Length: 296
Image (tube, rainbow, N blue to C red):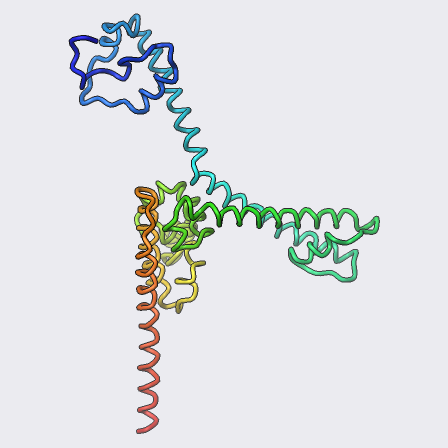
């Protein structure tokens, strides 16, 4: 490619046309300052026999680059975290549904009936009579699913702080993983405004609101966070906004730098304390007014 400015050379510069790996990497990483007649330059340099040959090579290289990018994404840590939290939720949901079936069925066969996964665990240890064998086996499936959910949760609690250290510190590992899964990845979560983070998981309520059939939701899955759940109902909207704001910053820090920012934890604590203090001040003022009225 003599005579061509280095800044205008194509992705195929210095590549053996039969080296698929090098071509794939060049497509993924290559850039140019401006557009050019790349097919003509590829032919001129001897890289391709003609324009059709150039486009055949380009097609194969771009398809390989796309496959590599998809594979890289699917194997990424945050993608594995998404699979883990969804699998945990599935195990817990199915275990609870089967536990209801077991409780109803076992109630017709055993005298010491019960409900829930705990009852299934007790029943799973039973040496069943012939008539009880199938329901006991089903109880054992519930126990196994509950055990698998616990293993998945333990894995999430180990992995989430490595994938998203700030988000996990603020939200807890399980909620952090759930937010990443709902957003579709850590990068996607990092790009979302705090208002969207606030209502992740409340999509049905949000759509109902947009159709004019319900009030605007104040929070989605972040309701499970202590900062929201343990705040007075009248102040939960404020608490949810404060939490979502810090979670958004945490997600961006995790995705773009990966550096731990402990000051976010303290800022959230202070903000939630301020929100809750307003309610305490109002209660104190009310009590004072009442006392003054009695004295009069």
